[in-house]
Amino acid sequence: MPPRLWLPVKGSHTLPKSSIHPIAPFLLPFLQPQFPQASSTARSQQRHATVLSNLSSPSGAYSKNIRRGRGPSSGKGKTSGRGHKGQKQHGKVPKGFTGGQTKLEVVHGKRGFKNVFATELSPLNLDRVQTWIDEGRLNINRPITLKELAKSRCVHGVKADGIKLLARDADKLTSPINIVVSRASAAAIAAVERAGGQVMTRYYTWQSIRRILLGESHPTGPLENFPIHPHPSTVSNLLPVLQHPGSSSILPTFTSTSSTSSPGDESDDESSSSSDSEGESSSDEEDTAAANEAADVALAKTRYEYALGYRYRLPNPASRKAIEYYRDPAHRGYLAHTVKEGEGPSLFFRKPVPRQVALKRRMEIKRAREGGEGEAVRVSRENRLW
Image (cartoon, rainbow, N blue to C red; front, side, top):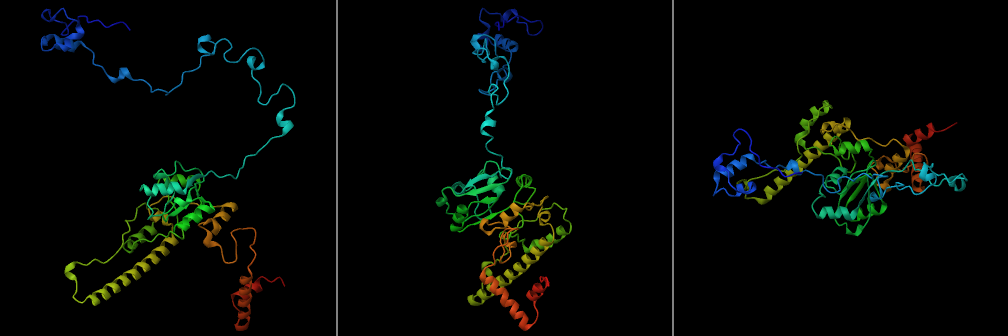
């Protein structure tokens, strides 16, 4: 670009005769004390520099296109990187073509397969969990769910089928944690329970995981080991919400109700005051237990997610393989409580009845026959063919 010249312009920007000096124009702004009029005039003519003239892409933002056949200096000239002569230089060769002879996939056969039942799980190791706890990024006083793990960046992205807990450096785990994941290895379950914690596996789909991360679904749902107990003061507010499941109101924060006393109310008789406080605490505990039971019953009869301000419910497994996994107590599945005594997690294979259970059933039938027909006798009679 040629150098820009300082030329007189018509109008107010024209330099007067008194301001013309035998000095280079670019030095005028620096000579304001000696020539104030000339420097002000020069400032009115100069262009103000902006960042728009210096914008450029960062290094490595894009790669230069390869220009083939444009001379030897580009490195892809003449033959354009295809070499000399031959079918690959003149045209295209089909995949697997070996010059007309029998294809390799015919000679050796196709190897491998695609597992349509494979699950996409994000790995989570116990040493990483303990590191996050030591740094204060995970709270062990609350259940650790997918939402907490993703929000604290303990897991960088949750895959389609959830998170699997693994036992790398399991000896480093010293904190008792209550964690809810999709899958867990046997070694990880043993390590968590050895530290005084608890593992619960729950079924998730990629849609439910997305809704959990967006705050539209509860992270765990109604689990047996993590019940939801509303505060007694919120039960009265809970019932109107339960009558209208479509409401999106969120319940108040649950706080503990403990009676507080001022120093001036202390009695001289310490024994009587302690007995009164124990009686009040016991009555408060009974009221709290009753309120919790009433709230649990109300929540069980309706869609509790709507009552707590969530838009969607979590799904349950529908395939036999998933149902059997979460019914298995060895996997700490959230459906393990549905397995009755003497049954196994499988929906197809019947578990062999233990000798003690069979003996117990025979004794029940015998007692029922001696003292009158009971439930066991009625069921046995209904199962008879003749």
